[in-house]
Length: 522
Image (cartoon, rainbow, N blue to C red; front, side, top):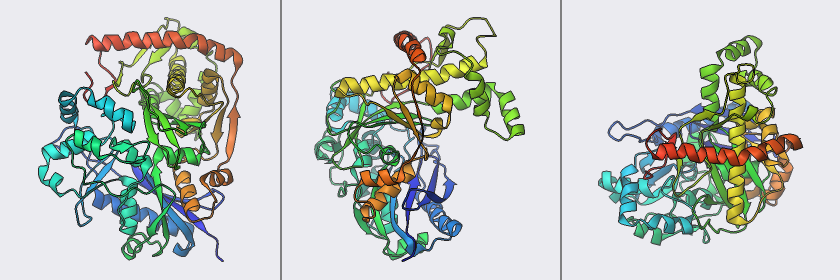
C-alpha cells in the first residue's frame, strides 16, 4: 500500500493555502496564494469576497502542492477545510453563490443601530443564548442585505461560512458545522444548531439555514467536478473541518476542557476550552462551539498587537531593518536582543493599545505611551518596543482573569502559538506576566495541522482528536516564569488597568480618538 497523506485547505483573511502533512504531523508541502477583498465603492467599509477568482486560487493551491510534493492524488487519504471566522457566503436555490463578504467587512453600522433602536435589550438576549454580540456576527450583515439588496435577499436559499463553501465546491453538499456557524450569532450554543427564534427577533428569515454536521465527520467524497477543478481524486473523503482558532487549538494539542492556548498574530486570541456552553452573565467575552463535539471555547480577542509591532518596526527601526538585510536575519531578532537588556517593567513606563475585552460595549482607547522620562539611556526605542511586548502580555493576563470570572477556571499552563511565539523574548515575558509555564509548539501556524488532524480522525487514521493531537503535535520549548519579573508585573497590572480606564475616559469625552470601536457603540 502506498504511503498516505492528509490535506488541509485553509482560507485565511489574506490568503488561501493547501497544506499536505504525513500521518505524524510533518508538513510535506504547502502552496499559498494571496487574495484581496475589495471594497464596493458604493458601500464604505465593505469587503466583498470574489468567489469565482478565489476558488480558482484555491484550486491552484491544491494542484500546486500535489505537483510540488510529487504525491499522487490517490495517496491523499482525506481532506478537511478551515477558514477565517465570520466571513459568509449566500447561495440561491440552485446552489449558486449570490453574495459574499469577508470577515473584515464593516458595512453594517446602520443595521447595528437599527437593531439597538428596535430593542435595546435584544443584543444581551442574543448573546446569552448564542455567545455573540453584534460586533462580529452575521446578523447585521444579513440585515444589511435585506435592507440594501432586497433582490438578493429574496433569492437566499442557504447561508454558509467559507470552510463550508470550500466543502461545497469540493463535494456539492451544503452544510454548516458548529465551530464556525456559532460565530454568526444565530446559533444556540447548547444545542449547537441554528436558532430560528434569534433570526425572527432580528427581522430575518428562518428558512435559509442549511443542515448542521459536526466537525470530524465525512460529509461526502470529492465530486467529479471537484476533482476536475482541484486535481484531487474523485471520491476522496472530505471531512467537516472548522473555524481557524478552533482547529488551531487542536493543532497545538489543546483538545480537552480546561486546556488553553494563546494565538499571537495581527490579532491575539486567548482560547479556553470548557465542557459547558454557558455564557458570561455580563456579556464581556465571546463563547463559541469548539470543533470537538461536546466542547466549547471562551474566546477573548486583543486587537492589533501584531500590527502595532509592525508599525513600530517600520516607523522607528529603519537601522535594524537595514542591518538585518545585510546580515540575512529578521529585524525583530535584533530588536529583541536589545530589548532583553531592558528590565521588566520598562522603568515604570507603560502603553495602551488594545483593551481587555468587553464584548457588549467594545471600544479601545487612543494608542498611548506614558510614564517615561527624558533619559535616553533608559527610555530609547528598545524600551518602547519592550513596553509593547509587556502591554500585550498584560492584556492576556486580563483576558485569563476575565474568563476565570465567567467560568471559575484558570489553566495551569498555556500553549503559545502563531507568529508572535517565534519570539523567545515575547514568550518569556508572557510566562513572567502570567506566572505559569508557556509551551511553544514546533508547528506554530497550527490551523492547517488542526484541519489535518480533523481529516485523519474522520477517515479513521486516528481513533480520536486527542489521539491525533498526541501523535502529531510536538513542543519546541517550555518557558518557565521568572519569579522576580513576575512580582514586577503583578505590581504593574492594576496601575496599567487604571491608566487604561483613564485613557478610555478621554476617548469618551471626545478629547482623543479610539483605536477601534465596535459598530453601534458610541
